[in-house]
Amino acid sequence: MGAFIGDALALGPHWYYDLDALRRDYGEWVGDYTAPKPGRYHAGLPAGASSQAGFILALTLRSLVERKGYDEADFCARMDRELFPLLDGTPMAGPGGYTSQSVREAWRKRHAGLPWGQVAGLADTTEAAERVLAIALRYAGEPALLAQHVSSNVALTQRDPTVAAMTLAFAAVLGQLADGVPLDADLSGRLMGLVKSGELPFHSVTSGGLGVPQGAEAPLQAGQFASPDALLTVSSIALAAHDPGVVIEPASKVGLVYGLPCAVYHQFPAAYYLAARFQGDVEQGVLSAVNAGGQNQARAMLAGALCGAIGGLEAIPERFIAGLERSEEYLALAKALAEQAG
Image 1: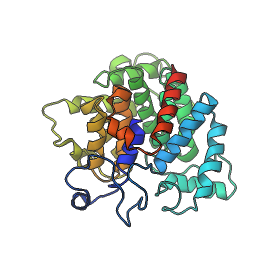
Image 2: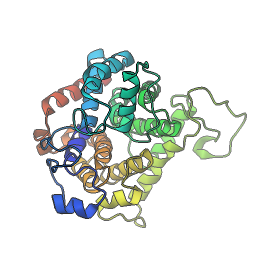
Image 3: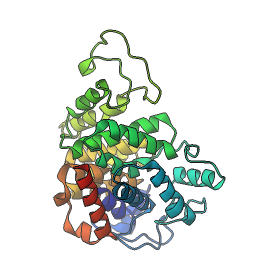
Image 4: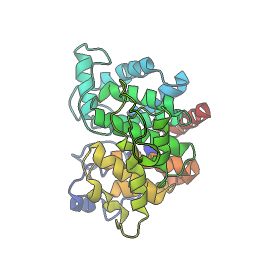
């Protein structure tokens, strides 16, 4: 729900790289759902509506709930049946307004007759992360299955190994938070423990605590990410968020610090920072992400998911649920997923 809300909150003020223009159009602080201005990316949609990222997250969530787990064939069939007929390969067509680069690439290749498994592109965005967060929550208590299903789903549309590694790392962090693990300086160590136990497919040559290697090096296996560094980011940022010598004020300046663009290496650190700083305060987390400008929709989805995983449904202000289009459906799906995940 945090992700759906973050997505919809950013629908109006989405993709303002000129922060002065953002303030002129929406005031000093965006505090609720707003409609896009004419000529903007989601023009014509009402306040509280989902973007295409929200549409795809809902599609993924329905597949997980109805199939009682991750069924890749079902997910692909839904993309073919529910999304792709609504696209034409251009950026501004389709449900929710803007269509991401990786989805356009997959659409073109499917349109040309290529099978799933051969349609992924090199986009370095968070497009896959925005949908696999549902898979991460479904398998939060089963890190090995989380890694298997998230990695497989990411590979359907994105084939850059660094993007895949960073996306899986984000999903692993989200799963840990949903399972009750704190977002703190110790989280990365816990994730590295899952690497050592073979539950997360990252290659590591260090001993416990990132110490000097001991014994023979285990060979890098097929399907295994070359470096676990993506797992170390979150705890470094958690330390920075509470270090009095590291100051980002207001928190919405996080976009200027980590970068306004769309790539994973801008988006994930900013989401980690906001979640580490505000923990389960969904309102402050998502609104700081939205008011940061740039690709604030992805930032708000990711930060909303992290904060929601920490704070739970009770941490979400009622006005955000009341003003969200399709909120009853989303709530029912979220609750069904939670029940399946135990």
